[in-house]
Image 1 (tube, rainbow, N blue to C red):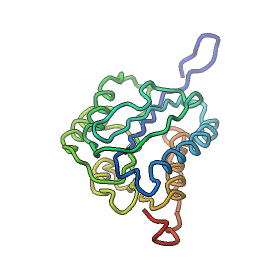
Image 2: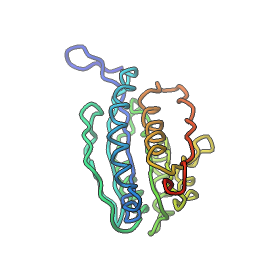
Image 3: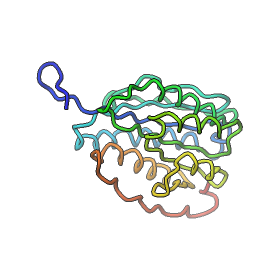
Image 4: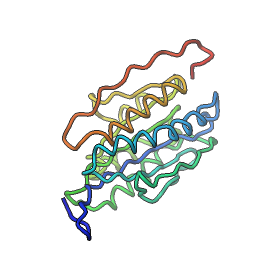
Length: 220
C-alpha cells in the first residue's frame, strides 16, 4: 500500500459510478422522487460501511440519461465529500449514449494495478430508445469496462430486464427488480453498501429478500 506524505497510507482507489434513468416515465408514480430519496438515504449507509474498509478509497460519480446522456456528478468525488443533487425526469431513454459516455471515461482510466475494478450500478424503468447494443459492446471491449463489476436495478414491470441482464453479463448477479419506493431503498442500499463494506477478494453479502407491494395501488 502506498504511503502519503506524513506517513498515512493511501487506500486503493475504487470508482463507484451510477447510471441513472431520468426519462419521462420516471416522473410517473413518484419514481424519480423515490430514486432521489433512496440515494439520500443510502449515502450515509455507504459511509458507515466504508469505515470498516480503510484500505480502499471510494470515489463516486453519476451519469444521468434521458434524451441524451450527461455527467450529473462528473468529478470523482470522495465518498466522505459526496453531496447529492436531485434529478428531474423528462425525455427519452438514451441508454446507449450513457454507455458511450461511460466507455469514454473508462478508456481514460490508467491501467494501474493498484486501482480496483470500477463498480457500476445501472437503474432504469423502461426500454432503451437508441442504439445501445453497439455502445455496450464498445464499453465491454475496454479493459476497465470489461473488468468492472456491473449491477442493475429494474424499476417496475415495464423495465427492459433483458437489456439490463446483457449489461450485467453475470449469472451470479441477477437484475434486481423493485416495485415500490421501499424496495428501491432496500436494493439500492444493498448494491451500494456491499461495495463499500466488502474487502477486495471477499464475497459480498447475500441479496436481501424484499416484500411484494401490498396492493396494485402501491406497485410500479
